[in-house]
Image (cartoon, rainbow, N blue to C red):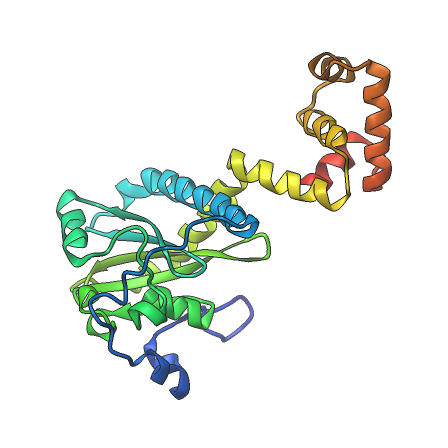
Length: 268
């Protein structure tokens, strides 16, 4: 049994672990069209920020699966959902499995939360905030009855950004998949996403914004963080080297740091 370090609390849950009232909330009929709402368009600033994390998750998961694919000897399907349960990506180990998913109506833009899809590994992980394990006909949706599924929350920057689910045929024992999916989620977050260029820029800009840097200070800060010299920055921005040093001094004061290494640590 997988437990937390120095704890007897299980790191994963199955439908049998749901309290009675929560279990009852999953028992609902889902019609053929309730699982297929249109995903909201990204218009607000908050939604645009979510899009940055979503793009980083998709790229990072694909990179990780490409690297570990040879170590998975049996057919599999990987779902990546955002924090609200919307499928961002679906990776199948074969074209035949992809066709099966297409026929089942499972694709990007479908919502796997309990509101739309009832009980599945993603909705269980969302409900319990830990790894969810749902087997065969435990699923509400018949499209999943041939699958045993394990889903882990993908945690980064102090919150759950999404969910990674890996599914195997119902005949396969999946106890091995519980620690595997946990490691997969951690690799995606802490090995891949932290090095994603788009997400790095977003996180850096967010930190700089907290210190109320001016537009010029943000320009200099970005170049200073990348290790550029004052002379290089002056040439790149068309200002004097002395002005660059004055801007850096102002940045240091606002961020309460004394040198480039402290500055870099604040932004990391």
